[in-house]
Image 1: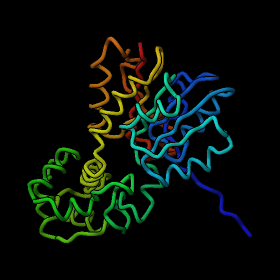
Image 2: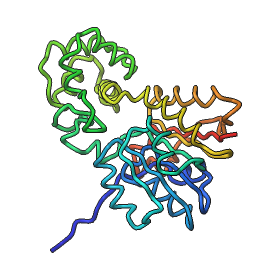
Image 3: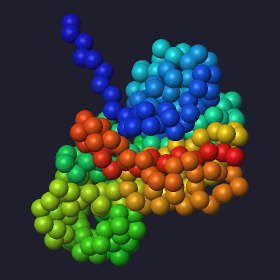
Length: 293
């Protein structure tokens, strides 16, 4: 019998993450967005011997994939299915305080985008779900079909920074019920008025719905504040964001606690041209580093 090899999401800027975290042998690190374990795998290898990793992810499918990938590291890795706004409690329960480094990689994984039953991609048919955790109560389908036109427009504008949010919301409401991801993308494409280009017209709308469903901005701010609490002196906070809304929150946070955090890279770190050529999904990534003082 032929066994199909397990394929995993390709992590972004691995070398830059390791450098930003200053990974060392015997260190204790927390990956708040474990995903399939790509960054975690690199951290565990670079922190051997004696290194430890706590991996947190709200997506139970991601946790299962990471367990398969990182199982060879034994009890040096702990994986907890949770949102990262529970970082403080999870880190203490896992005896990972003080930590030498905390990582937030805020992008969607290839596995999430490619899964037809998750609704994250506007290129695939599938239910409008968009939940990171299947325990979450609200889905994108509920927002699309139950918010009134003004509320829907406000969500698309606030979380997608979409200038044509009112036009898009009006078209969505007129097309209800909308239950399929590709159907929603086609409605946005048809009525947004954008010309054909490199970026799909539905990109910002899908971003907005995903952020709203998962309460991403509030959770990010809570997670960043808790990272400051669990980091030891000299510990590093590394973040990778993929859109301006996230990046603004991170930049604001890193600059808001000058007595507790020292910004390491004044200029945002971007992936190399070679990496973007290998992995097109890395093209919008922005990496920032701060150190606990």
